[in-house]
Amino acid sequence: MCYRLGASLLLLLMSLRPNCAASLPGHNQQFRSHALKRLLEVFGMEDAPQSPQRARQPPQYMLDLYNAVADVDGVTKQPDLLVGNTVRSFLDRTRSQQFQFFFNLSSVAKSETILTAQLHLFKLRGRLFQENLYERQQHFCQVSVYQILDSNNTSTAEELRLLSSRILAVHDSTWEVFTITKAVYAWTQDTKSNKGLMVIVQTLAGQQTSNHFVRFATGRDHHSSKQPMLVLFTDEERRGITTSPSLKDMATEIPFLSHRTLQNKASQNRNTRSLHFQACQRHPLYVDFEEIGWSGWIISPRGYNAYHCKGACFFPLGQNMRPTNHATVQSIINALKLANDVASPCCIPDKLFSINLLYFDDDENVVLKQYDDMVAGSCGCH
Ligand SMILES: *[C@@H]1O[C@H](CO)[C@@H](O)[C@H](O)[C@H]1NC(C)=O
Ligand SMILES: *[C@@H]1O[C@H](CO)[C@@H](O)[C@H](O)[C@H]1NC(C)=O
Ligand SMILES: *[C@@H]1O[C@H](CO)[C@@H](O)[C@H](O)[C@H]1NC(C)=O
Image (cartoon, rainbow, N blue to C red):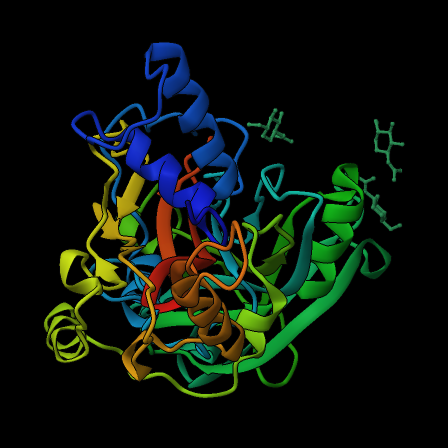
């Protein structure tokens, strides 16, 4: 039997399907929950997040990001779009003040490396009917984002640390993004240091402005799609599934072959012996998140095709089976029975793709995560 690369995951996935003929012995409820727990670990989680209590709309930014990175099945279509493998979004938890924000970052794992953190604020149109004549004449403003160091007293400069500052048009109504990486890094090192953020709006001459001059949407007063949001890009170290290093080092680009092309090619290479066997090729293996009870917290995709590799690797191995030299030699030894106990080579994935998951975590924050080596792109004899 060929149980090597990725085999544990594929067996696991197959064992979760109720009607799978190839299921392992002892396939009872306890086994199922054990297998599901192991599958969660593959997705970097100890326990499945709680499904949100009520239907919640994920932030449009996160949906757009997911759709830019992944196709409908979650398979990565733009590998270079994300720098790290995780994007977390947090909604403001103060829900009170327009110019003060607090984001609870307790869900960020210790194993995550902070890459970039951004404050996304929806700027509302300035009020033209305001009484202050001086402010009415201003077309631009300076918006500065500060980390609050001492929440007792935010009126002094020592208690605020400047993170980011920009000049904005007063009458624009759009999302504004500020980089706040330094503060978020400090907060993840020491949770207690998180006193929130403060935004100060000034005229270009540096004068304080009234609260009506420039406004930002709040979670309390405005539509949920305009809520203040913290977006955090991180890279999470994960225990990967067993992949041989040689797989990642393979420099040659292998074209993505459809099921049919593979079948056609395989049929051209049949010989008398393998006529009785189906040659090594890729077969569909759909992982349905609804079927395994995860559809409550996973936003996208509904499931994905992991594919699996199955079939014979008997001599002679055609080029479509992408044999390694070692596999070719092994198939010859096997065919000629030159040594006892030498099996034919294994039919295993030789190219793997990553998938993306968009989901609600336990705090109902929307998270995008990318997982390497989840989809068999092609199969070969190794
Ligand atoms: C942050 O969230 C965690 C988990 O939901 C909670 O236990 C903690 O009290 C929160 N911290 C603050 C400061 O609100
Ligand atoms: C803020 O006030 C609290 C309670 O009044 C006090 O315990 C704390 O030390 C103060 N923080 C700073 C930085 O002065
Ligand atoms: C905050 O600090 C300033 C300057 O040190 C001081 O004038 C003011 O009274 C303080 N406010 C509070 C609430 O402690």
